[in-house]
Length: 128
Image 1 (cartoon, rainbow, N blue to C red):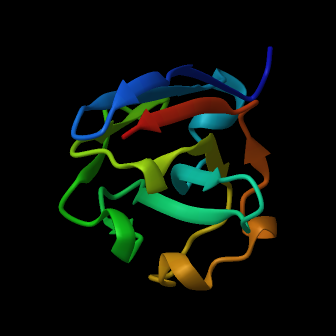
Image 2 (cartoon, one colour; image 1 turned 30 degrees about the vertical axis):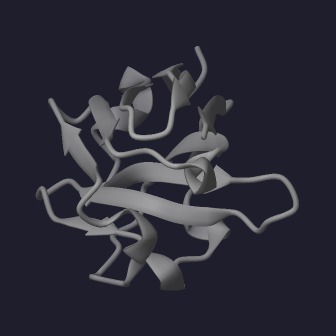
């Protein structure tokens, strides 16, 4: 079984909404401290979008604050609600998880290597 399995994504018009979901495989779920989403647009660096820690603390990239919301149902399942989407949100979105504590490190300061579990990616395309 893949460590992380994503669902959701697709194409939407600007101003619309999408929801991404991710499930962590049982063998990893209860050793996960932080989970979230990264994205990568063509020609751009990969960036952290939103994170949620096992204690429920959240962190967001400035570009999505007020529009995106990350939540978790339990230690295995979490989701990203994306509202007021615009063309700049078009990217491949990856769910990620880490088996190490974040210690409050801001999302923009987290290296890719901090996350040892990655999903396969799901495309989000926003048309204007």
